[in-house]
Length: 196
Ligand code: ITT
Image (tube, rainbow, N blue to C red; front, side, top):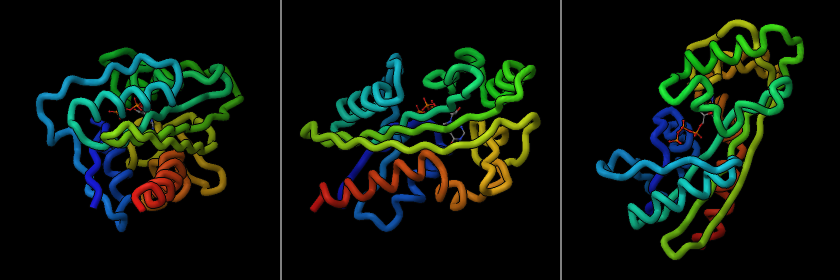
C-alpha cells in the first residue's frame, strides 16, 4: 500500500478525490492529520504552477508522497476569470456564497454564459518523482442557484448534456463528468503504472 497525503484543506474536494481512489492500493492521509503545518502560499499564475507548489510544499513538510489539486472556473465573457482566483474571487475573506454573488453581478449584462471548470493534479513522491494530469468540464453559468450538493460554484454551473447543475448531481454523477473526475482517472492510471 502506498501512503499519500492529500494536499488540500477543502474537505469537499478531498471527499470527491477519496471516492475516486477507492479500490487503488493507496492509503490517503488528510492534511488534518498534520496539525501544525504552515499553509502553502498559492501565488502561481496558472493552475499547474499552483498545483506543483502545493504538492511540493506539503510533501516537504510531511515527508510523504503528496497529491495536490488546483482547480477553478474560467468564464468566457470574463476573459477566463476568476481562474486561479476562483476561491478568493470576492476577496480573501469571501466564501462560496460571496463568490457566486460576485459572479452573477459581473455577468448581469451578458448573454454569453459559457464557462468551464479546470483541474490540474500533481503527484510528488518523496524522491521528487512527479506525475501531472488535467481535466476540464464545459458548462454554462445560470442566473439563479440550483441544488444543494457539491461546493464552490456548483449550484450556478449548468451542464447541458445532463440538464442540471453540478449541485443537483450525486457525488458519483459529478465525479463521472467533472474536471476533477477526469484528472483523477488519468492520475489513477499513471499512479498504477508508476507503483508497479
Ligand atoms: P485547497 O487549495 O486547499 O485544495 P481550495 O478550495 O482553496 O482548496 P483551489 O485553490 O484549487 O482550492 O480553488 C478552487 C476553487 O475553485 C474552489 O474554492 C471553488 O471556488 C472553485 N472550484 C474548483 N473545483 C470546483 C468544483 O468541482 N465545483 C465548484 N467549484 C469549484
